Amino acid sequence: MTIGLDNELEQRMGHTTTLGLKRGLPAQGPWLVSWSSWANLLRFVPPEGISLQDLRACPGVSERQLGGKSPGLIRWGYVTLSGGVVRPTKDLREASETVFPCLPDLVEAKWADHLGAGEVHQLKEVLGDLLSQVDQELPHYLPLADNLMWTRWGPSAPREETIGDLKLVDRLAQTLLLYTLEHESASEVPLTMAANLVRVIDDEGTRAADLVRRSGISKEAMGFLTGWRQRPRLSVESTPRTLLLTAAGRSAKTDYETLARTVEQSWAKRFQGDVTGRLRSALEQVVVDPTLTRSPLAQLVKAPEGCWRSWVKAPETLPHFPMILHRGGYPDGA
Image (tube, rainbow, N blue to C red):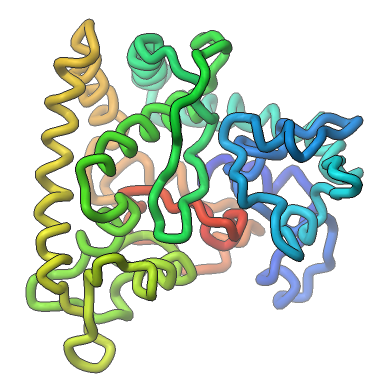
């Protein structure tokens, strides 16, 4: 879903990317960001501006965003910050009116055409049934991971928006956030580490060069997982350029597999109306096969000609958990 939104954005908004400049393309707008930047910050910035304090009170806006000496969204050309007031640039004002708001409907329509309108409606409906049982304000996308890769979301106000107003991407993100919080509350390591690193390291070890291919995340994102952020140490270099799980890493891998079943069983008791069983069924009809090349999702993540993803090697798989980093999305995407 995120990749589809990013591809649509890239085709509709003038932008700049490092890969594009290297290919001789002119800079035609702000540096490209991923959907998460809009969903969890940029959509809250009105034409007249908003105080930084009020902005940081909006659901999904991190305290770290627009902080420091050179904040990304300012440097990339989306907002300005002066006198404690955040204002949109001309590029953001135009994109807020004509581009960003229309993207979810465009992608949902493509999903319906490719996967079947009934299947997509069923998925959207069961996600709504689950979220209607959660009276809590939630962001429209997963929050930024913290410095140690944990997903943080504290107690929040009661939900004010109606479930019917939530797009499919909003419902997917909010449900995944609820799952993440429950999973991480019982885990020694964040889900980003468990799903995207320890899961793909074999018992006999795995070449570091294969981690990106096997996980589906970017090289830049993998660098966040294999460095000092591991607490406890989950992997070591057993031989040059080969990673082996430590005892803590092996334990984390086992917990990751066990906790998935535990949370699912917990949800079956927590949510009424057989929501958990219906959600699994709806997701299985969309994913169909765990191998990306045999899944109908493969066509939905295929990049149109001219998008930066069309210039790089196609992924062999999708991440088992999206990594939301302060980098703004590009080139991390989902």
